[in-house]
Length: 410
Image (cartoon, rainbow, N blue to C red; front, side):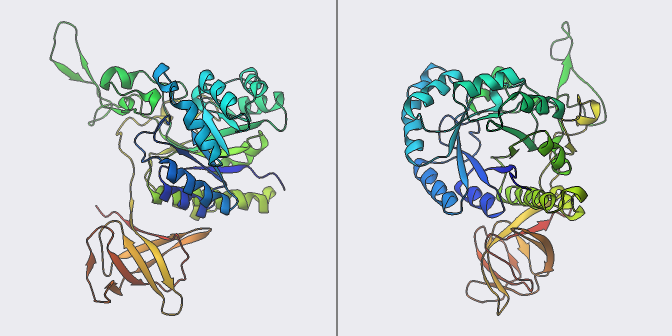
């Protein structure tokens, strides 16, 4: 089978970009220091954008620049120069949500592909067709559409007109991500990338004539979280997404760490490849599903794809993430003769502790760190300091960009 859908990964920093690509992403989306909807991400300087594009293109991958804020007048002053610069650096596309921003891109960088963000609320085929007619290459479908509706949009547009859908990550209860609650409560504009996520907060009720008396609204002993959606996960429904004409599978998470990016991208890469190897008998390997349970996440849901979500798609008991595993370190070198791996520590771990290794394009495995030395080849009992260099013996051969994780024991 040909025409595999693109696997599109988040990259909140240059390091994450490299992990996403090494673990199998066909493209990444990144934000500059302005005009991007994720100010909590480290984001990219112009020099980092240049390096990221060079890294991706050297491996036959693409880089898309997010400029999908809902801009106010002052935001448009520097936007043309930003567009010219990322175009000159070789960006493969720019993602916008606003008609004014779209017009500026068309004017100052007419050869730069434009993708229309989910922020533009594309929920029907006429909206998509209009954007294509104006010159857009791709439309990112709103997250509140069913697969049936996605398929209907595909039926009404040309084969070369691309559709992108979210397949994994956090869901937003606001309309395609457009939110006023954050700005109202905290003066942080979600539509400019500074969302404070008040939809996931714990709320109390106050009666009009009893000011200052806060009455808890109970659904259990922890309170209630009215707008706390489960996370999207469509890895078991790859065939349905392909059947309905989705060209690009988008993973959410530019503020997530390298372990999240590597694990989720690696899982979807292996699942997509497995489908194309044997589409008639496709079933996601349980080991891959287990991998997705080991990253920081809320319980999983299929969102709106198979009908309107009900109360089972919300989390009412807690607004925290399930985080059973932590990144312990990244492997920077490995000697296949001595079996010694050089590791840069990210979080403290101990000699004799059970650890796991994840690597691009292969299943994870566990080992015990009985051999542990520092960079001076001195025996040590733990690795307590961030970024310290540690040497571990790992019998299974590992490759560059492998990550060591450890289970969080409560």
